[in-house]
Every structure is written in structure tokens, then in C-alpha cells.
Image (cartoon, rainbow, N blue to C red; front, top):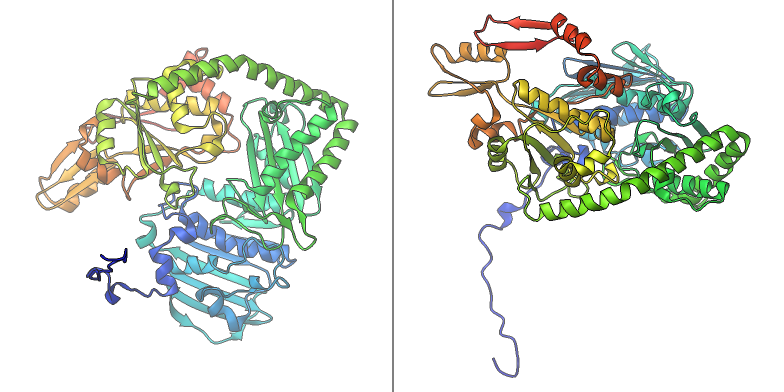
Length: 635
């Protein structure tokens, strides 16, 4: 080179990037290719945030928006053999625009604020996502004595009828069957559906929702929601629930006597926001500020919020969320007046809560006692926590118990919903899972034998017990469940007596100290096959005797049958089949009427062995017709 001039050289264009690599996708193909952008994740229905529930929510959201606008007082929902039907009695989609509203992106009535105010979503995407990911989708609108319907398969139009006369009431009826190409061999868990429907009922007082004929309706809004969450018993709280409702904001809250963790149920425009957002942050700040000012004490924030359980709801124009699944609310202003959401909520909480405490001196005294109790417990745990963190830090430098993954739940990566921590039993099982896992999203924590039975023990044991301390550090849940590092926590133990015992001990750990992990649907049991049935051409893994019998029939005579007795016997190559896309997870679901303490005392308490033995004997059934010794607990 001369005179410091750069000598540019033409570099040949890579042959693997040309016009042939440029693809055009139709709207339905884009949704089916990238479903995570629209419904979070696919899944088979084992998790409460799997896509089939998002599809149901997207359709019901439209019915709720009609109700909020003053049209239709009931919604009918049926779920039969995997097919969903939702019928509202609102205004009905304009018949001439029916095809475009359900089958053309960026088309819908919610772009017009005059037609829809303070609705859940404004992007016109939800129904199209349902359409594109359903093997069959039908939308029928009834409007002013006329009706019309359209039918699709995977987003491709099959049928569009003419407008004809009808005697049906106004409204919209959507029927869809999720596509197994997207969701696999899916199934709806009705407990998840029930929880979703109750939330709609609590947030829309007076609205009647029917699911397979069962009615869901609430009269007292978030007060009823919180009562249900705490088991319908106010004696579990430090003081009666405080219920505040003004304008577009509502909240209900109390302090729990059962846990030291904060627990929140936050909603924006009827949409549940599990990750909170500006409304929840504003509420937490307002509660702490009001309490400090009322008592004229500079209490620690953690002492005020410890064991606080609350439900909050806000309605705004043009809501903003993080992502299509709306897990976090991000709006900052109350339109059209322009006041900030923080100022709006703070003003309401300050006036109502302060007045309530002045009028109800007994509640004020109970609240102060709770704060002082939290302060005492915090100071008592300070040194233990400090020593535990130092110990965990030292051990983690050479920690072989945790095989980490690269992506975590508390990040904004699109794969975060797939993040999983397997809690395994022994080195052989953890070794097999570690070798076969997806290191991007799957981590492994290895237990050393049976963990401690912590029933009735204080949280002090979490920090003094090395295994529990390392586990909570790996999960990152000690300060708040919002910091949880894995969306799915999967207990992976052998399907024998010892394995079942370990499962129960781990359940006690989570229910005793971190119940939010269970309530929020993060805890699962890994289902692994009991048998491998194969011939020279095909291998079938069976999870029950029934599946084994069917596999033998399908493969013909004399197939090779292997009975897996433990996870350590399953090779890493085989394990990849069980923890990949076809993973079978059994969710741990807490019904609202379940008494955690009573359940734990009955099954694991030391004061009722005769009663427990009688229960086991009465509910034990021996099955010997398959030449396999198996025990089944009924009930």
C-alpha cells in the first residue's frame, strides 16, 4: 500500500446465502413457524402457561372485552375431547368483516378506541394465533337477526358462508381444536382452566361464566379472589382483608400467618401479569410509604412487605405489556389525563388505607405487631444467612451438585419459558440426564440420598442444611420468587418406594418454605418409562402396564421387554427421548381448598402412625395379573 491508502479486496459472496435463502411466509405460516412469539411456548398442557391455555385465554379475552363495554352478561365455554367452544353474547363481529377479523393480521375492532376502551389487547393478533395453530377453527357471528361463519385449518380458509337469517341472540361463537403438529399429544388440565376462569369472574363482578355447564361468578371482586387464595379462612391472616376500590384501580391485601414470603396477584385490564409491572411496583411502594407515615416509623421495607399477600387490578387505555403473552405490565400513564400510574395508585392507597387504619385501631395494632415480628425474625436470621451465603459461596467454587444451563427464567430470552432444573437422586441418574440434556435450557441438581424431613421446622434449616442451602441458592428464590432462575423445577427420582419418599420430602421442602413455587405452577414430577418394548425394527417406551400390553400387541410376538427399575439404568442416549420435546411432566397442583399444613401433618407427621397406617391399608390395591409387583394408592 502507498500513502496509507487501504487496498480493498472483493471477497466472494458465500454460496450458502443467496436469493434461494430468502423466504416469504404467509401470516399463518409465520405464526406456526415461530409460535413462541405469539403464545409463549407450545407444550402439551402439563404446564399452566403452555400454549393451549393461551389459545383459550385469547378467545375469552375478546368475550371479556365485550362485557366490559356493556354487552353480554354471560360466556359459555366447553372443552370436550380437546376441542374448545366459546360463545359470548356481546355485539358479535360485524359480518362483513368476519373473515378479516379472524384471518388477516393487523385487522380488528380494537384499533378503534371508540369501539373498545380499556381492553386486554390492542394488536389484533390473538384470534389469528388461535386460527393458525388449530387443525380446525370456526368463527360464527350472530348480529341483528343475521349470521355468518368461516372455517379454517391451520390458518387456511376452507369455508366462508353467505349472510343468512338467524334467531340466535347477538354474539360470537368460536370453536377450535389445537393442532397436534404444534402441541403434540396435548391435554387440558381442568384445574388450570378453573383457575383462569375464576380470575375472570373475580375481575368482572356480575359476569357469569359457564365451563362444561358449571357456573363461575363472583360478587366481591378481588376480596373474593384473595379469600379463595388463602383457603377461605381469615384466621390464617394477621388481620381481616382490606379491600379498596376506586375508579380504575382495585386491591385487596392482608398479611399471612402461614408464610414469610410476599405473594401478589396482579392484573391489568383483566390480564394476569405473573411478572408484575408498573402497577405492582407502585402498589408495593404506596403500601410501605403509607405505613411508615401512619406509624411515623422508618420501618425496614422488608419488614413491612414480609408475608404481605395482595391482589391488585388496574384498567388503562392502550395498555402496554412486555411480549404478546402479557406477563408483565409496562404502561406508565393513565390516559387521557396524563397522570402517572405511580401517582394514581399512591393517591388512592394513601387516602383509603390511612383512613382505614385511623378508624380500625385493632387492625392498626395487629399490623404493627406483624411488622415488629417480621423485624425480630429478620434480625434473628441475619447471622445465619450471612454464614450460609459464605458457605454456599465456598462450596460453589467446587460444586459438583449443580450442572448449570446457559439461559435462565429471569432473563428476557425467548427460550426462558423452557428453562428447567432437574432435581435428581444419586450420581448415576444425574450423570445420565446431564449427558443427554439441552445445556442451553436444562440444568441438573444432584441430591445426596434422602433429604431432611423439614416438616414443622423453621426456615433456619434452609440455611444450616448444606443441601437445602445450595438448592435455594441455585433456584435464587430466597429473596423473592420473581428472581426464580428456572421456569420448570422437575423432581426426577426412581419410581420405587425410596424414590417416592424423596419426592414427598422435596414437596415438603417447597410447600413449607417456598409455597409460591407450587402455587405458581413451577413444580413437576418427571414421568419416565417403566418398560422398553422392542423388536429389530421398532422401539416403544411404555409408561404403564396398559401401554406395555398395547406395545406388545403392535409389535407382534416375542418382542424384547425391559423393565426399568431406576433412572440410573437408562442410558444417556435413551434419556434424550424423555427430557426433550416429548417430555412427560406431572404438575403439582394445589387446589384452593387444600390445607397444606393439614396434608403434610397427615402424611409426614409423627403423631398419627395408627391413623396413617389405616389409611394406607384401606387404600392399598395389589395388582399381580401382569407378573409385575406394583402398588397403587387410591385417593
